[in-house]
Length: 221
Ligand code: 0O2
Image 1 (tube, protein in one colour):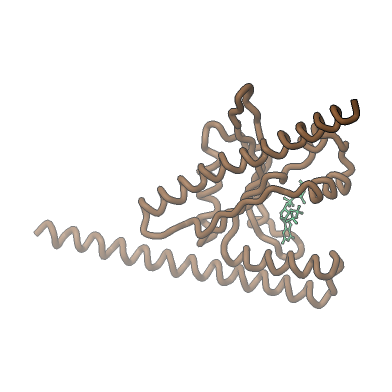
Image 2 (cartoon, rainbow, N blue to C red):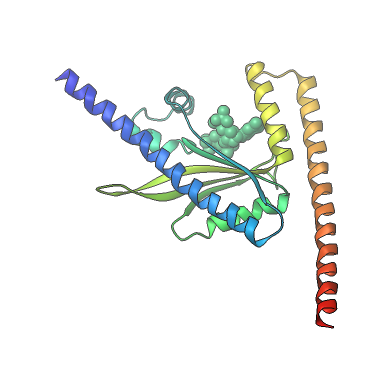
């Protein structure tokens, strides 16, 4: 009887993890379509890079424990939103909102939560646009709504966040004040770069639009 219940438990957990993998697959397809179609329609790529990760069973348990949530699959399903995670790295700040809108507008995507750390950065300087969505996954005998956390940010924000993440864990979540100050300062520098790059890009786009019109006039003559 013990072996049977162990088998059932393993099977349930495998199905649990699989549904999140399928949720990632669904959303990765949607985002890849947006990326390729955007490249085709415009002469630059608003999405630089897309990556995904499935949280490991150890990290799921550690986070569930940290949040004090009920240690059942249902409990974890309702309390943990980032078992399936996708990160979209964009060229410019305005692109992050464009991608956000395009995902949110899809009929089968339900937006459950939005955290705009670009408008309101965290005290440490962290910037990123987070959305938790639900997407249907069609299985052989049922349709399951799967939660996926999507983080959208610029290359500069991503550069900052990956270093901060490394430092945070190197110091076991207790980073010296001097480094915290430097990180906040680096976040401001990253933001200045983002703003400057976007302004330059807009200027070049405006220029080529004018050049495009001139060409049209030439052709018409
Ligand atoms: P890891 O190691 O990246 O997986 P909630 O889930 O709603 O109770 P949570 O998880 O704090 O609250 O939500 P939030 O603030 O939206 O953060 C979710 C994820 O965003 C984090 O997952 C990080 O990946 C990222 N993040 C949030 N704040 C920071 C930050 O200050 N620095 C960096 N580098 N990343 C951040 P995890 O599970 O906390 O971490």
